[in-house]
Picture 1 (tube, rainbow, N blue to C red):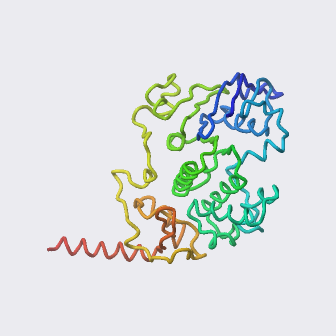
Picture 2: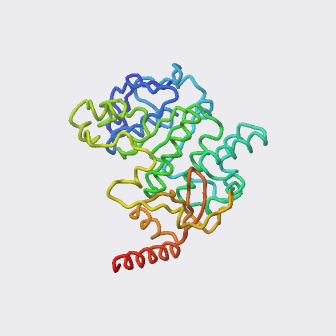
Picture 3: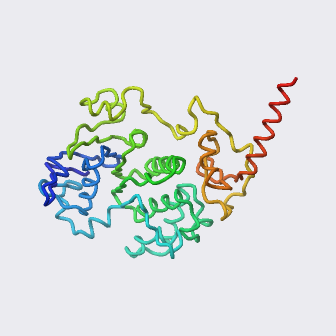
Length: 335
């Protein structure tokens, strides 16, 4: 699908960003590139859509050198998600997602159906969110829209350059789950750059570990843990104690943390009814630590279950609940 053949990049000041890289990314896989800052991972990513040109070597897509593609043809077929998503603030969410399909002259009905199906895929009701402006969404929701915008015209390849690194841990966890669900349904070829090894282990079908412009090892999460190529890879991955079988509750359900079921506390919401005053959503099961972190920033939270908003909970609701629990425990203690 995507091949790097003896690819190097040297800048005019003599800096080597890449050194003789050979690599193959398979069709339909979620391929993660990770390594220390300055290792060349973002340079490689940007070479795929020719935002950065090579000094030596060849990059191929579907066995064809990328220099043979018309630059516009090449980029039409590649979605791109950045850390700073930069939605158009004057446009609605639906209009933001529809930008590339409209440029490609899709029919209005086709665009409408595509936008709503993508929103539904990540648990954002199209009728509720389509007419909102980016400023009405949380940071995590905006980034989700950025991902959908990259997918809107059904590109064959999607490039993601540290797309979740600026988000809080809970929003980041939700976006990771969304990407896994999108990939399960759509099977795109996704090239994902991150600096977070846990994120790489969770998302990657295969992971490429880089250092000083060179590829040190490519393998599945299990292969990197069980058979590291050298000491650097072993230290970087974290050894056999790292969890390579994370599920979507991993950040919220560790053994040493109490987990709350917000379904018992929340105020239920009718399907499709999402109050505009609520700026972020949390999973229905969440640890006390994570809940306190997010409640410190928001007075009211939406509660999400199976990618659907099912209720809302306020800081006051939680204080009342905890107060009641505390009174009950004190009462039990005197019996």
